[in-house]
Image 1: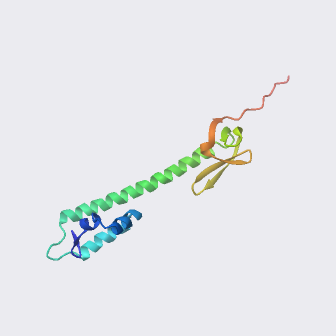
Image 2: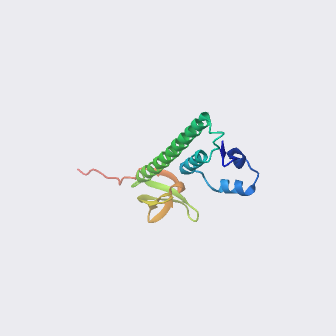
Image 3: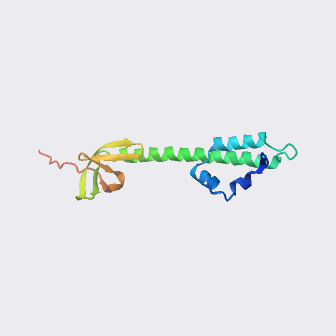
Length: 148
């Protein structure tokens, strides 16, 4: 296929470092793909129109790209929800975590803190990363004696 008389494959496989650098620095999304497809159709050579097979191939690639992006977004949302579920399930649990200066510290998880890049836990007033946790246990119940 050609856009204004230039083969797109030639553009993409060009040894021009500026074209390669530009392409590698940007991620092409579905809007970019659609714009490219529209530009191809608007600027095709009337004496050599786009082959139907090529058009169908590009449309299927567009559909695949969109489905992959949707799947990626859904997986990201699932991972965030899973991490939140894991973090909140630790509230009230006794954990031992590794502290770079003090070694192993044991305490009870008091709260979960949410940030744009993930979650942290507050243990004994100290905010820790979930990756620092070495062990998780049910809290030790105070022993009671039955008096009769």
